[in-house]
Length: 379
Image (spheres, rainbow, N blue to C red):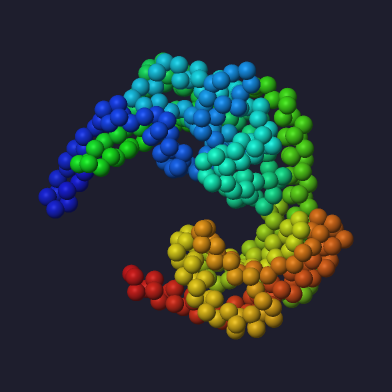
């Protein structure tokens, strides 16, 4: 790894080090770095436990346990300067152990992690946010045989890489990451590189009998909800057309719990939300740049009284400083999964999405002109 001296137009080599030379430890350093920055491994991961020892009839501990965005468990084994010969065997044992964990157990494991290491928090709420669902019952966790293994070390022995490649050829998903420390003066630099790419994981049968009933129920529930949402949006869109609402005229029904339509401002759609317990209309400020969303929100809220007067009700202004998005919401409680509630629910959505569009039409048009002027000046 090199540092670029732009003034001299030269490269200077960084000093590669061994973890042992720097008195760095596996548990106290590397593990903590990855626990607090798991996307250093190239994807979004949610750490749900570290030094996990919840295995029956053994005192063994796996380094880090995580979930990926598909709800699969990821076993992460960390070594320092040398992978050792037995790391793949360790990871295989741990993966077999965690393969039988069900959703309730995973939630409990994560709750224990939050209570012990993160000062508390609601495990279910955080899991829903990470997996981008409104209700955890909608999805399966740790389903089938899709557990994954990540190996991290400065150097991998041949027997380790050969085993990992063999696992990959058998459809078991594993990755190897080479982690190398460098010194830049007094500054420590860590380079993390994936050295073994991973093909799509295929089914690998390990005893899952304890999960079969839960998985089938979750899958059946998910299919039912998808069909229910599709039927609801078909009825809702038909009513919107009958009511002369043009905002959604080119939108098709989906299995999702939301339906979006353009507001004239890029990445800031109007949304209708079909929930189990409520219906919502909202303006979602969802630009890739979170700071831009907060800026747009702050400009809109200066006209709050004017907008709410035009809308006819008090709106729920959600700046959400801890998230990238911001939202402006109006909602009402409904028994959404009771089809007898649908006519009233759809009529409410039709009325209030029209009011929302009318109330924000001029303020958003003004913001859009400002955005375009700013973009043109930046060119």
